[in-house]
Image 1 (cartoon, rainbow, N blue to C red):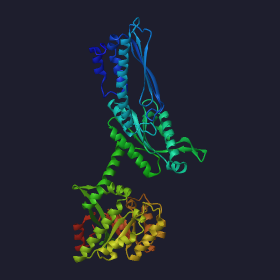
Image 2: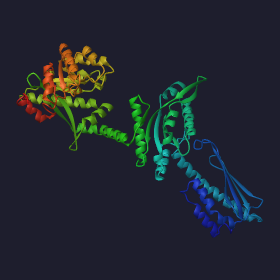
Image 3: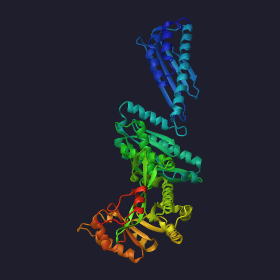
Image 4: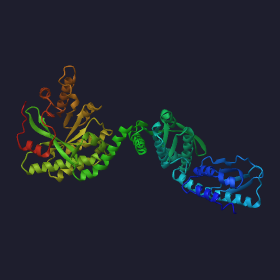
Length: 561
């Protein structure tokens, strides 16, 4: 063993015994550093053959032979072979040839065996370490990379300056629960494995597909193959076994697409693709949604609004403003609309920004009742202070119609503050459409029975205006501002349209409020065609409560300018 404890071998051992090296890097290190040992021990050639069985971490198994070292002095005869079994039931064969013209004695053969055993031990530790790392980045049921695996790969490409050559996609299999329900979960798992392998066989070069869990996947695809890949996953044929029979199915997917730019981090790309997929799931119309950085920013802002809303409502960051309505016959204050304003950290958040978000996540229902309660409390205070309130309209989203007790909940709030129902008007938006028109009819009927007025907002912007007029027994119709935008132009027929709508509404014993009145000429024209009320900046902008109270307690007539 004198040769084994030499400085040459000790130096070699110190260079290769690095616990941080993965198995591939270790093999390269051994090959690079083995020369002095080979020369010292008269090794002419060292060949290693590694064979691994099929596992979840190595779908197709693996067999490879590597020439670790070949001496320039040539290779002799009479090789020494040492074979080993790995922990995963694979095998390693190390074959050592002496230099040409050299023959090992028995002690030297024992030295070779010691080197072989030691290399197998060090490689075994590296192999275990590599398997642990691979386990962390691999989806075990399919053998494909998992989310951590593809994110790590994306980061490597980013460091190399190559990530912007790719598009990141998140996709989800449509109606895959049908397979599990009909064929069973075991068959469903089999389909997922086979589907994943089809994806992995379809990608090329340095592209990657990962399974994120369940029926969710992530793909990193070259930009020039983006549409090709989307087409592929839109219709993947498959065969499943059901009740002993082969059934042909087509697997399709919803896809969120995020083309990566040079400025994007991996987290931005991941968030963008995930947000795009989420939008594809929600809209239910388009299976493919593409997001850029701007679309991601909008989604993140929407998520921020949703997260901030509960605390903002609790902290009373929402203020109620009142925009007066004016009787066009005598220019007197006859009502108002309650509008909400969100003041966060001293700065306003635009209703155009937060209202659609709250509509989307359902939080608008809480906000609507918050506004109604604020209105009822204000009216109670005005009455107690000797003021004569006007009727206040408050907006209610169509989402409320899913609540069968909506009418009773509204009446309960009004009664809580002991105010007359004549002071409250519930405003419903026509443009949004109503999937359950029967629920809307029922709600309007109950409101009338309770003595609460109802109105249809944005009338004329939807597709069911005439049906609304004919079938809904509402009290007030609010004409959308878009009708007035070209009212003063002789080149449009808007005036004719408005006149006929107002005549029809009046004949149905309803009142008309024109929204967005900004000029005296518009007000005069509306008065001439028997429009009863108007609302707009010609008279007043939405006013904070204390300013509106001055209107209530002071002069209620608006002077003609």
